[in-house]
Image (cartoon, rainbow, N blue to C red; front, side, top):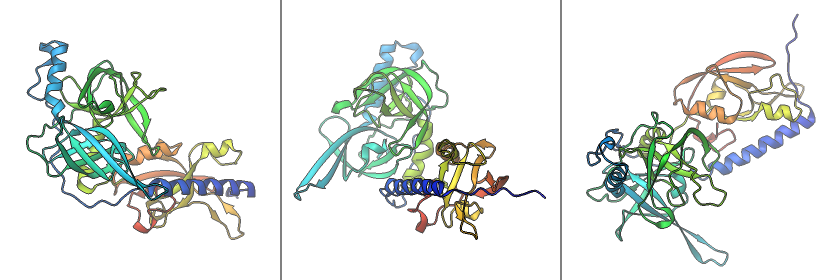
Amino acid sequence: MSQKAVYYLSARQILSLALASAFIAALAVVGFSSFGTWQSRNASSIAFAEDAPQEISNPETVSDEQNNIEVYRTLAPGVAFITSTSYREDFFGQTEEGKGSGSGSVIDRNGHILTNYHVVEGAQKLSVSFGGSKTYPAEVIGKDADTDLAVIKIQPPPEGLTVVPFGDSDQLIVGQKVLAIGNPFGLDRTLTTGVISGLQRPIRARNGRPIDAAIQTDASINVGNSGGPLLDKYGRMIGINSQILSPSGGSVGVGFAIPVSTAKRIVPQLIQSGEVSRPKLGVGMRNVGDLVEQGIRLPVKEGLLLTNVARGGAAERAGLRGLSQDSAGEMVLGDIITTIDNEKITDQDGLYRLLDRHKIGDTIQVEIIRNGRKSTVPVRLVPLPRQTQSRPGRGY
């Protein structure tokens, strides 16, 4: 008769996991407490067209200099200078005003402007200009910290807006010419040029989430360029300038742009509902590899150990288990996720990337280790109930 393997934890291991889980839970609450609730809005017609603006000549028939001039002359009027203002009270009860600035791209004639989340984060007042002294009030329509993207809108939209068309970031080649238009250091509508220096670069949003497939460029990007367009030689937006790698804080020729393919997926949701609806398992977890390095004995060396399962979430509905106690009061390991849809899962980033490719209502095949035995569990991705969204496990 075969003996079923059940993995128990020592008192030291229980304490280690409990402290780590509590720390992760605290981070989750802090990390997500600032998210607002957005009212539903009507979606607009986004400039997903990949045709070059007619005002730009075929780059093959003109000089590189003439191409730069035509792209700038045609698209610069559609690049917004965004000023954000926030207020807070100091120790003495006096109101202090803080200001920030960034860039954005007009994406339709209804006044929607695409920018970075970090450009509008914490803003209590927004204004937009397109060069000159004329400014327009704007409001945040939707924002997504995970991809560092946001959409704001001019209210009411002025006539004659220049729309920056979306291009195709899936067909880019290293060495391809690019142009960046933005407002570095408050210098409105500045043009810099360069090439694509690398593709598929992994970068992270401010909340730590991975942003995959970022575009690396040597086109000069500085503070204030954030949110502005990275354009190809035909005048199509292929990326949203977002980050620089710099020991000094200035441009050293290593900048990163969020691919426009990500924006195509995110922007309609931001305009429609103000946020991105991502499927979540509703679990808290630890990387198995980290625990093994700490000397905790586990049945596998890679995977995600479930520490808790949110009530009403996809994981609980599918029967997945977190840490628990048996009838004797011994702490028993939770399930360990090893693969999803035959794709190996070794850390939270891997899980996040996989879930981000799915939508609510999809069913995924989750391979788990429970009591030393391997099994596959179908999990239908459902929204977390409202009452559990701010509890541990909300992030995944």
